[in-house]
Image: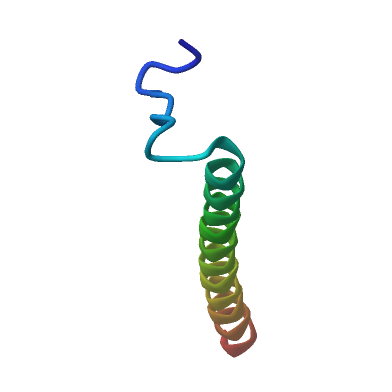
Length: 56
């Protein structure tokens, strides 16, 4: 087994190509969402830090 929790999808429930494409697209989607959220919070913190630095 490649990973501890990894389980191969059952052939009757998923066709391989479709499952791969869907899960890949979903993973990319989730990564993009997480990256965007991280970037936004980073920008907020940097903006706040800049304001504080300028103010004082």
